[in-house]
Image (cartoon, rainbow, N blue to C red; front, side, top):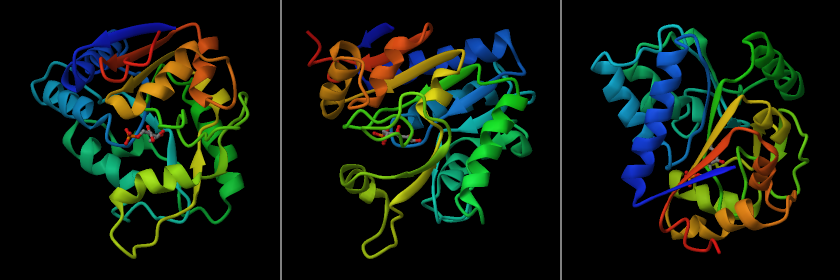
Length: 242
Ligand code: F6R
């Protein structure tokens, strides 16, 4: 696992977007694994700028998002499909039909999980996977105790994650407690993984990821097994490293 420690969140976003730009320049038909949450927003803004300047193109690329709330259709403002359309897809030259987010409104979620795995395999696997990290060490919605070889499946969110994400929902608004998420095994199959973390609130999770035992108690520690994983973090997120 490679660790890159940078001064602040802007530097982390810049470094991360350069990795994605380099991937697209090397391989225009890349399969990109994408994430939602607050952390990747600045990276997506950088990619939009590079695309609009003509430095990179997504025209031949495909994308697969890590996760989605179960019970929210893609038109719901809190759904991750909606987030991706707003934060990235609507502003770049990607073919929207080549963007994939687990279907939060699937009639048969278990079959939808199997189909998502098949679609990733048919696309040739993920070339570059972007990750954020939860304060409890989750990646995607693989909460602590998730199987380290798990595949895309329905997962219950922990109370901590529900509380952390409550900031995105209005008072009294329905907030799902279930998700569809790529598994840890699915993530580990990506050819390259880049995890971004910024801020002091992520410092304990980063220390457990890098220095803790390889354990389902900290799902991100599974990246210790990946041959080509890079953690791009700011000084605050690095502050609990030995
Ligand atoms: C989002 C995802 C989550 C987030 C994590 C951190 O698709 O998979 O694992 O990356 O919860 O979220 P932020 O960036 O909001 O701190």
